[in-house]
Image (cartoon, rainbow, N blue to C red; front, side, top):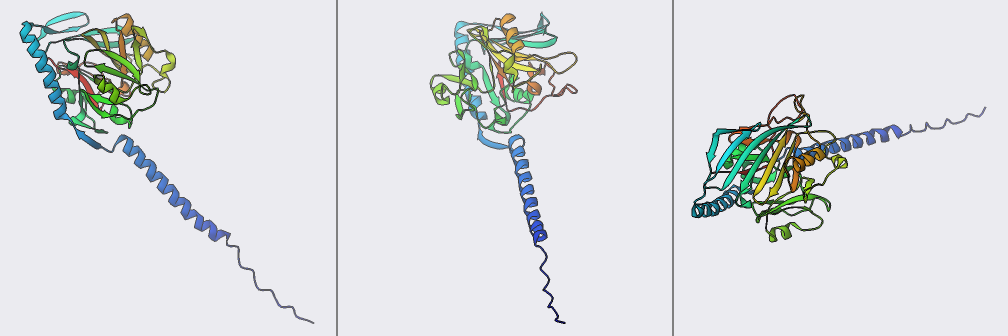
Length: 337
């Protein structure tokens, strides 16, 4: 019988080896992706980047504005007082002599749509008395502090949180006449321009450059929005809540009633005592109750804070369960000394 040679055994399939080789590559890719995602989150919300120290510039600009006003005031022998009005009653004990600054402020507290709203009426002889300050005197990213701490450092009489520019990489930033960021957030981004002559204007970044605004006399440019009131009419509707806030929230806004008369508005929200406002409700309140001709929405939610004569007068909250200030990038303030 003829013996057949046995065929050599076929090598086992190398699929298992290939799978084992692919697995480490997938694992490495997943780790890299995770690390990248963590870095992006840290870079967006945590990592601090300082681009410019600007405290000196801010102080010099403020000093120049106040010195010019003080000179004019002395020449006119004018004397005005700052009075606190809460709940519609004037507290004469809170009156403060502010003749040197030409700034008069009064605080009132009202109820509107199941919400507590704080309104500061500001009378200023010069629009450049509407000042701004950065956290730690630093223009940068994720450089933050509380509104009250910045207000104290600036010697403010009244202050509200600003537009939280430091949480974004784009959007015009002009503060006290100085251009810090000229990159547009988008063509449709609505900014508020406060010109040195007192004009308030809501513009779209796609229509004008930041440098053009400065050349035209822009004193402050805020990039948050949207514009709430334009030419005395409500400029928002329910659709403007999309992508910004789908429910009633704490709000912060600034507006102009007439030449030399401005308002700072902060509403409570997210609590049983105070529901909060939609953008449309906020705009309607400012038109119907305050007679505002131009108004703009600043950063809201947990950021909404009003500092007045040494005290945080509203109830800042992020989740409605605790009342405390959120650290932010910047403030808008006036001082009467």
